[in-house]
Image (cartoon, rainbow, N blue to C red; front, side):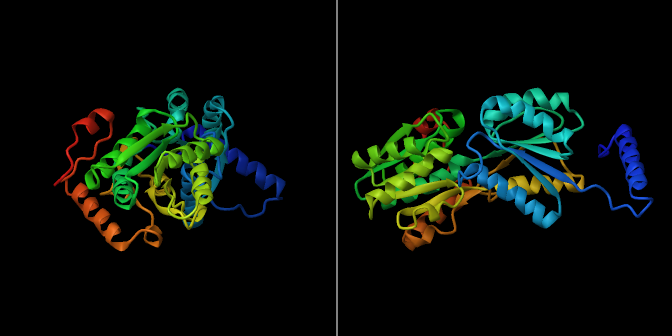
Length: 341
């Protein structure tokens, strides 16, 4: 187990304490320095009511329950990732999170330059002795909302809106399409990629187009871009459904939201901070799926979705956990997927 401070860190602390005592006239000192955690957000930032906000909830939970100090680094462009990841440890962060796969290259560069710092990255793998890689089986949760979409559609057309067309988001698409196919093989899935995770206007435009083409249920995996989906559903009115992602997005359109595919980034962040604080942090890859409660349906699913449909989704969930269904995560796996009888 590596010690939290190297010798030179201890000497620095002793010097600072000595200076503080002198400035205070020799009064009592406080306790040990607080544990500190930081997150470096992707460019969509706080307020996306999805991925970044979920990570921040984990940070806030750690602050409330573990008594730690926290720091949030917002970024406006990809070039901000690397300096933010480097700056956090220098400002006292004991563990720093790179939120999102777009920070992979930045953390790959920064982590070896700060070997005594602890890092974690969400949705990607960085192989370094001081990095924990936190992955999710997005395809499994997406399969469940795909099943709900396939059972709820009356037009036999459903939609999927992706952010960037990259392997991570293709996992959402593949799982969703497999879920639809399993319960409703006659349903058509309309797929559109926005090319952006932070453009609600583009998301609304795509959603309105898919609704116009006959889709009556649309699922998104597009971060802040997906906020436009809920605007479109509200504009279209009753019978036009939206399915959220990452966080419970029911409140964005209470009359038009069927469910959300919960991706428990907050839990992953909180548990990793807790491990680091307790001294049990380990580098390497950790995967969160249905079995680990890392993905799943939002608690407000029952508000607009009939109980019998929720029950069918729960049966499929158990089949996935039991290994009876292997959910596809790529186009190639989807092409070979055979729905269970």
